[in-house]
Structure formats: structure tokens, C-alpha cells
Length: 366
Ligand SMILES: *Cc1c(COP(=O)(O)O)cnc(C)c1O
Image (cartoon, rainbow, N blue to C red; front, side, top):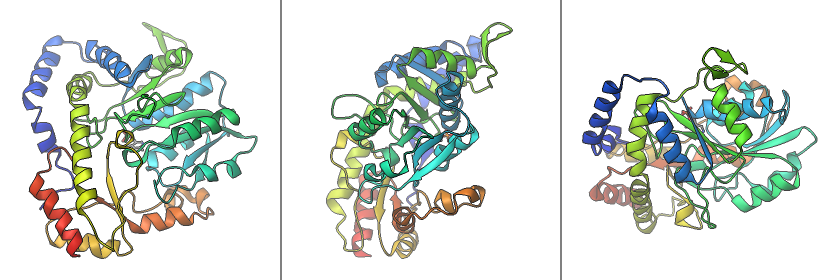
């Protein structure tokens, strides 16, 4: 069976370095917010080109801390509306709900699967205070246009970069440096993946960074002195040590992903399948390679019977989930159609050439 993702294989590539990092961590005797966390924060902010990076415990926490931080600064209040693409991962929406804000779902563009810029304006009213852009599947949203809209309507622009570590916009800016504040996840399956839960916030805003540094650690300003009511969302010291190693390989891994994507794009040729659309390889890090088919379920079964595991990102849209009954009235034809047709092919740095060949050939013969 060709697995959708083989994390053991992916991390095996770094085995010696990871084991050495663990030894160093064990011997350091410093297990929370030690030098690995601060070194990783420095390295990741310079990678992204931002002034600040705050390491936190997950991507969801990163998103929530951005919204909490803006609430502390008086720039957002309970009940404010946040625009968000309807076809994103559940965490983007949940972060808005959990911080007392209201998610307003926007349809994606049927070509790029990212937020449809032409459908944003109709959802803006006096309560709209922010937009959460998501670089879905690893492809940057239309950066210039979302920046323009945010400026025009005075919205905070927040970036969910959990799927786009290392994607570069045409002006040279990296994902994480395309907004007022960005959230990253280092969940093990992400392009930059830890060996457990981890996340980060990147920003150029000093005041916001200072608030979030406090919020992630009980609101603490110094030993047993608290300025704010925070929580415990610290980046784990061991995961930071692992992430420092994986960060050095991120560009190499992303290029490997692009090569595999290019192979699929050049070799899959079937009337049953629509390939992903993108304008520029640098703006896409192919976190997930998503094809579309009217016969998606049959294609999925066919591939599985022939030894290829595929997944669906995501099978049920948020407004159809029982946890989000308040969103039930949304009519989102593009989102709903996409959820019926999308299929994610295996794509990771451990995939072999004969496997990519087999997958492409199978799809063409379906
Ligand atoms: C993975 C992911 C998150 C959440 O990250 P966790 O670390 O799992 O909390 C948020 N948004 C998007 C788009 C993601 O893919």
C-alpha cells in the first residue's frame, strides 16, 4: 500500500540529528521555555522575515492568541465579525468562535480553492473587524487583493499559514509576513512538522507580540507577577529543538514536494480529473495535492483497491457539522460542490519515483 503520508519515513531522514537534539535537551535540565524555544523563535522569525515569532502549543492556540491579543489591545471586541473562507480546516473557524468573535463564511474561488475576493465585499458591514485569510493546501491566497480590501475597509488582516510554511509571494515576502499577524501549526503532518503538537505566531507588531508573549504564559510579566489573564499555551522545549532541525530542511523538502507536484501535473491526463490550478510554483508549497473528479468516490475506491491511499480535505463543510448548527442556514454552492469532488493524492518527501508513476498511471487508466 502506498500510504497517503508516511511520517516515520519522513522523520527517519533526520534520525541522527533528532536523537542528538533529544540528548542535548535531556542533559540541559531546562524543559520549559528554555534556549531551544527562544532560538527557534529567532530562527523562524528570520526565516519568515518578521520582527517577532512567539512559539506556542498548537496552530489553534496561535490563532486564538492573535484574536485574544487584539482584544487585549482594544482592537477587537466580543461579537465582532471575522470573514473566513468556508472550506478551511475547522480550527480556523473554531479559533474565531472560541475567542467570542463571529465567523462569517465566504465562498472559495472554484479554481484556486482560496477565499473568493469577489465575494468578500457583500459580507462586510459595520461589525466586520477582521479577515482571516487561509493559504489553503499550501497555496497563497491573492495577497495583493486581500491587503487592498483590508486597507479599504479598515479590517485587521490575519493569516492562517498552517499549510504554507515557506511559500513566497511575488514580491519576495514569505507566508507569515503577509498580514498583521500570522498563525502557524507544526502538527506532524504539516510542511514544517514537529514530533508532537506545536505552533507559532509571526508578526511585525511589537505591541501585539508583547501581549502574546504574556498571554501564552499565564499573563506573566515576571516571576509570580501577572499583567493579564492568560493561559498556558507554551511551545514545548523538546519540540522547539526538533523544529530547529526540521526548519533547516524546509526549503529542500518544499522543493521536493514541488517536484512531485510537477510530476503529477505533467503526467496525470484524464477526462475524469481536474488538476490543481496555480500561477506560480513559489507561491505554492503543495502541503496537499488536491484533484477534483465528478466520480471522486469511485476513483478513491479504485485507487485504494490498487494499493494507493488517498484522503479528502475535508469531507464535510463546517456549516454542515453538527457542532456548528448556527451556521446551518448558509447556502454555499461552491463549497458544497468542492467537498463532493476533491481528493488528495499522496505527497511527501519520502515518496519514491516509481510510486508517483504508479499513482499517475492508475488515475489515467481509471
Ligand atoms: C492544521 C491547521 C490548523 C490547526 O493546527 P493545530 O496545530 O492542529 O491546532 C489551523 N488551520 C489550518 C488551515 C490547518 O491546516
